[in-house]
Image 1: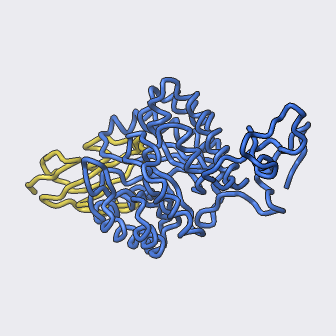
Image 2: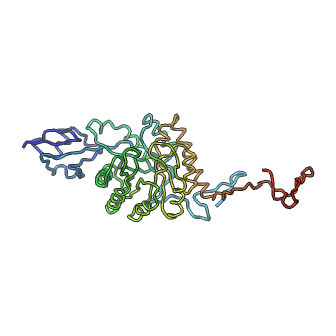
Image 3: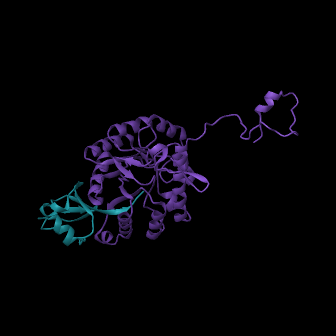
Length: 70
Length: 300
């Protein structure tokens, strides 16, 4: 498999496994016990279905955490 | 209901007017304070926490942004905020700050609900980047969709009466008009219009959001009959934020009490507050004034 992803706005190679859960937890090293949310192409992907979510060339992945705000 | 404490009558705001509660209810949920605070721009997380402890806000706003794995792990502000929320009655109010279309705001709101585990959303759709004026058309579209998805929508809007009515008609639990542009601290730029909102929308929950710079301005909003005030910069950027948080808490409470008490009617002519009857012997009738006319006048 070849292609690219945009992760938080930065272009990166599409991994061979193409799996969202592996990408987030293993490749990118996000923690498991702290809350954050993931969207693919602007659509929220609940954590329960990360493992069943396949990524394709050109997808953009956003990983959002809490910040302060007014 | 009056409770006498010492020599001064104290109004029990929870039971004023023969048992009618003054609790702020929005969407069938009781909000324990009419002062709401943002969580941004404080000098430190500790100062932020201390401000919250001092002001006891009903809502605390927060947001969400792209974060790296490290930023997610090292999010001290969020940890402090979570701890505070768990220990108090304050509620979290995520916002959609930075969105410029209904589509963006809806997407961010959905992610906020998942992240913060709450149906409350402060809906922001900016229409003009310079003034940060809400995009009124996109705002109504976004509000309609989010209400249909079960959100408790609190939209940041302008003080336009027709817009506020439209937002309420699509199911918003309250409307939150600006007093002045975000972060300006200019206070109530159009009190006439804000007063009109209160009178034309007597049943609506109205919250002033944005533009408040001083406690006196928050108090003025509450005296007009607004149900709550949301602010951030005025506290976070004060020389002594914790002290300012205390000042705002008192101002909001004072303004609310004044609204309940019913302010006097303004008048153009002076009117003596000291009784005229029984003026002492040295009082002289002014030349050219009759006795009756003289009685009508007074001096302080």
